[in-house]
Amino acid sequence: MTAEPVVAALDVGTAHTTALLASVHDGGGRAPRLRILGVAETRTAGLRRGVVADIEEATRSIRSAVEEATRLAGVVPDGVYAGIAGEHVRASTSSGVVAISGDEISRADVERVNEVARALAIPQERELLHAIAQEYRVDRTEGIRDPVGMIGTRLEAELCLVTIGSAPAMHLRKSIERAQFRVRELVLEPLASAQAVLTEEEREAGVALLELGAGSTDLVVFHEGKIRHLGTIPVGGHTVTSDLVQGLGITQSDAERLKEAYGCAYEPLIDPAQVIAMPSTGTQGERHLSRELMTHIIHQRMDELFDTARRQVEGAGFVGRLNAGVVLTGGGASLEGVTELAADVFGVGARVGMPGRHLEGLVEQVASPRFATAVGLALHGAQRAALGGGGPRRAALGGGVDKWAARVKGWLQDYF
Image (cartoon, rainbow, N blue to C red):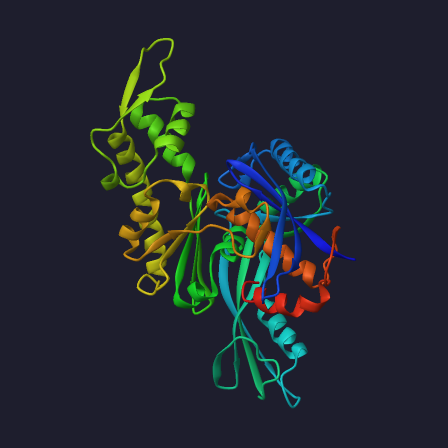
């Protein structure tokens, strides 16, 4: 009898807070498998565009989601891996170089050159979130993923440094801690989602991941396995809802309900004759709404969003290099017609990113693009668990974690 480590993921979004608990075990392949034990989703209060604006309200949302997931899972986490995103996120590239004195490059040499590349002055109002190895160079040989064991005299590293605002990070940590949970690690949400829905082949070929949230949209571009661009667009599902309120003269609650039931982002898919019955009110009798008009409003806003994202990709020099197309995640990715519109704007194929690979247990409960971040956070936690990161354990039959830790590390080191 051995035990499986249990990881807890927390996605505090502008509209919903999601908590997920999963046990980690060896699936027999290169990657670990997660057995989903419990997942819960509550409405978020206290956030604006992905950033905590009211600590007390955010604390209540977090406590509610984690306690419900804990009740379903039957295990209490001693810490959570929490996602963070927003317009305060910045990414830059940094290089470092060291001389090699031994016969071959060792793991210590790699850690030394990474430390040199990380040694940039970070402003006081910011903190380093991730330092992600992009590639190594040994003497004149470029494009090396792992230089350990190679022969050379000069080792160079290129890292992607992701920094975040100190205040947004502090407020998120404080909200989680006030809910009586420990923050194991903060993880950038679009990178967590990428772990859940992108394949290695897509990241090599060139792909843009768009996470369509309620308050904002996050963008990450991969090419040749490297992070080429990170960006945030201050437009999300709440913006679309506000457009419907203004354009149709309806209430916020009616706009949300209609968007969920009849929303479409691509006008060519809609029958111009289709009419939607609206609920009557105290001052109005039975009302009807043209679905074509509603779709036109949504199409215009989503077209603007995708065009802004495309211009960011173009500015990074990769608009013609997305050979694997565009992958859409987040709650907004469930909107009808969203892939057709994205394909039109970007001029490449588009698909919805659904978590599902490497999962067991309550898989159906997370089979939606809005759970991509939570699943990705749990996968990131799996790496830490496999490499000896503590946490509660769930009794299980079969081999333990140690025998496959090396495989887990090899699979996840491409991300973080």
